[in-house]
Structures are given as C-alpha cells and as structure tokens.
Length: 452
Ligand code: PLP
Image 1: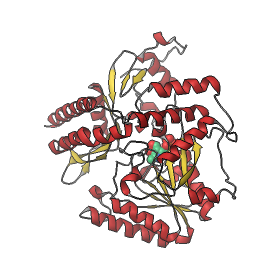
Image 2: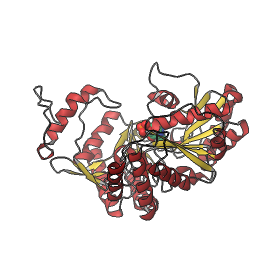
Image 3: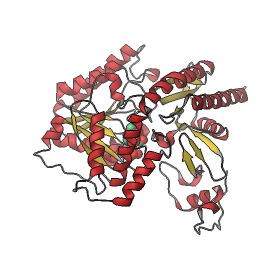
Image 4: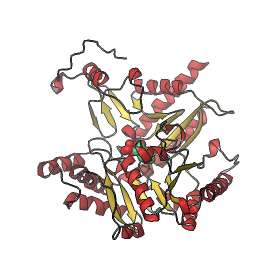
C-alpha cells in the first residue's frame, strides 16, 4: 500500500521519471473516482499495456482478465487501431454532428452489417449510458408512451434515465426518475420464483412480466429494456425461451424491445451480438465498450427499420456535440475490420467455451467456496459463498482479499459483490488461459487452506 505524502510535489515529470509512487500520489491528491468512497482508495497504477497484459512503472506485469472494465475485447494497443486513430488525428480531429464524414459513415455501415437483418441506421453517442438514454427517448417518441420496464438485476449506466432503469442497489437516492418500473429477471441460482429448474424459472418469470405489463397498463409502456445477458449483475444467462417470450410479449402489447449489449456485444460471448444465441432480435440495440474496445470513447443505438423510418418524418429531439466523433469512428472501423480479419470473435468462442469454460468448471467442482459458475465465450462469473448449502454470499471484504491475492500473483479480474468475473479480452490464447487458471487455482487453494 502506497502512503500519500502530505507535501506531495505535483510538478509534471518527464515520462521516464514517472514511477508508481508519483502517479499514485498524483491520483490520490487530484482525481475523483467513479463508484468509490474517495478516502479509502488505493488504485493500481498502470503505465503501459499490450494484448492481454499490462505493466506498472516498475515493470511489474499483470495478465488482464478484467479487460479493464470489460471493454478491451480486441486487447490492449492493437497496432491497426492505434495507427487508425493517429492517421485520423493527422487529417481531421473533430467535426460537428450535423456534417457528413467518411469515418462516421464507414463505422455505421460496418455496424449495420454485423447487426441482424432489419436494422438500418446507427445513432452514435459517447458511451453506454447516454446510448441507453437515447434508446429510451426514441422508444418514448416512437410509441407516444412513457413507462420503461427494466430488470432489478441490471446495470444500464450512470446518467439520469440509465441509472433509473438500473435495478438493485445501483439506483441513486433522490434521482429516481418517474416512469421507470422494475421486474424480476430469471436467476435460477437465487430464484425469486421458487423455481426448481430452468423451465420453471423461465415460465414464471414470463408470467410475472406479463402481470407487470398488465398492472402498469400496456398502453402506457414504451419499452422493455434488458441487458441480453446481465453482466455487472453476475453474467446471468437467461434461458433461451425467456428472451423469445419477452419478444412475443413486446409484440403482443406494441412495446419497443431494447437490448442493452454494451457489455455483452461485439464478441464477448463468442458472437458479434449476444442475442444471436437466442434466435430473436430486439427493436433497438444499445452498444459501447467492445465496438472499439474503448480506445476512444464511443457508444450508440442501432435502430430497426420501422423506428428508423418513423424518424424520417418526425423530428428526433436529441443530440450530442461529439456524436460520431472522428477519432472514435476511425477506431471503430479499424477494430471491426481487425476483429473480422483476425477471427477474434471466433477465438472468443473457441478459447472461451473451450479451455476457459472447462477450467472454470473444474475449479468450481473442486472448491465449495464457488457456489455457482456461469458463462459463455469470454464472459464468466464465479459466485462465491461462505456456505454452499445455504448459498450465503461471501462477504465483499473477503472477495476483495481474494482479488488482492490474485493481483499479487499477477492476475487482474473484475469483482462485484460476492463474485469474481473472469472476462479476458477476446484475443486470449489457450496458453494465457492456462496461466490465468493456474493462478486462480493457487489462490483458491491457499485461501481455503487459510480458513482451516
Ligand atoms: N450498459 C451496460 C450493460 C453496461 O455494462 C454499462 C457499463 O458497464 C453501461 C450500460 C454503461 O456504459 P458507460 O459506462 O460506457 O456509460
């Protein structure tokens, strides 16, 4: 743990003179962090990165199985994307959203080519939260209705409507906007419906959603907003029949179905979009993160033909100065081309559903502290319990201890509540998977032994 120096000198050093201590001190003195109690922070310092690895200023190497915030699907510093950003910066850094630009048009064309048939236009935003804001607004304008139904176990971003749509504890006190209603989504391991199997969970969750729609008044519901596979809430893979049933309910009641693919999209599940696993499609697709791996912030909404046509002769009340920012767009074009040509989505499928899934399954079978393992592609969660019979969640302080032990062994993971999310970049190799699994095994073994 690095201790903050009260007389810290914040004069900017040349890069070769930067070190972990200086950067940590600079951060603690001046930077206000997301989702954090500021006084108790001890952020890890990262100086450089390549592929699935990152380094601090002392040269200490870490295998990045967090993909930062589950966004570096193409890995760190892909040369094609870095070069594309540099080339774009040299010719045109910024334009107003009203103008046409080659990079923006090419990015939209490629995204439409990856989406299912029936999608025709892309609205670009700066990130995932504002993409959800705009999808919600489109649904309200299109239907003339106001209510948005979303799941308790979900995360949709940290702006007005996006955080109001988010379920669980993430709703910010006093910012609970009107027009948002929540429902329970399937989660068999901790079923709200007393279901004994996936079929029962699926049927009861659909009956529950139908009742929520009826009670709220179908004519008042603009949209159902769902993460295709809720990510931050625990990689909660829904049964196939559930998403198909939600699609049917939306059609029956004339409700817009919005699927939030911010975390699950662009390769993470071993498909371009997670809904491809479910043989159905939404009306609006929300994306961000993996679309250009976050090299330059970008997000957006992929709009289906009927909604797109509606706005041909209805004004869209919405916009952003940086919608379709050239640097972000150049990064999207290069990312999607590289992913296509290098078979990166196929790699996420092969390595993620092969050695990674097999290794995590074995780990879960050997360690009773892992109450449940769920995942697809390079999108996995280990749900940790102190009592496997009662499924008592392992306290957050213990999960943080495990995260620290993993870091000491050189492995970065993403932890939330009582879960370790194992979410490496889509380019991860079988050798890197073996290395990461060996660290997980060692740390679980040592931790369990320390409890005896
Ligand atoms: N939607 C989902 C499913 C997410 O996982 C996130 C972020 O993790 C967001 C939306 C918000 O995206 P951003 O943080 O880019 O605003």
